[in-house]
Length: 278
Image (cartoon, rainbow, N blue to C red; front, side):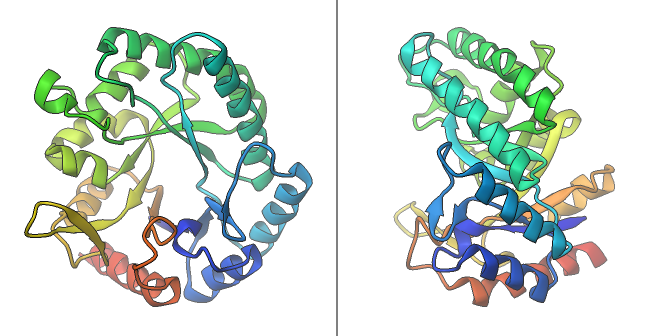
């Protein structure tokens, strides 16, 4: 088990402070989402990325992923061409950061689009990006994320099922799945079913916990304080042989009301180590 955290947790920190704190707290790695409080985009300097990558490695830390917000499921046309060009640039940046994966969103599409079209568009995008992924050595990690409309209720298709079907129908071994625990949970998919869908192509997990409010909305809470079976999931995947990255995604950048990173980052390590001990 290797433990990392996403820098979405610390929008006020410099990149050097994020590295220093990871080493101080005892993390194994950093998942880069924000650099100096801003999301990394394709126009980020390759030279700066190499500098940060070298500093991360010098601190003894790995990089499970560089996170993008790129939506891979796009209809052929100019917008899709721009998306693919951005993706190629981000793959090169990920390599400069020393990242093992580039995180993508995939399988998110309007209700007006058929599942068959969405499947084909996503597969075509992966094939188009395969040469750059192969050249850089960076794998593409497709995050399990809800679709923004009730795909489960209307079509019976969860994010894990859709993306497993994407990968099973195309010969792109550079493409894997990233299990964000919240996505399948809010879709109502049991964790063991999600594991069936992702186990053969799992890149890494993003760990978080949520608690439901009385009105049915939900909020992020520290690991172990919510309603998600985080400990059961960790135990299930490790017992089945997964020994890769578990990365804490505390979405402080999106939710400023959340506790500061220096408060929650040590608690994540303590909770995960308690799961490891059983």
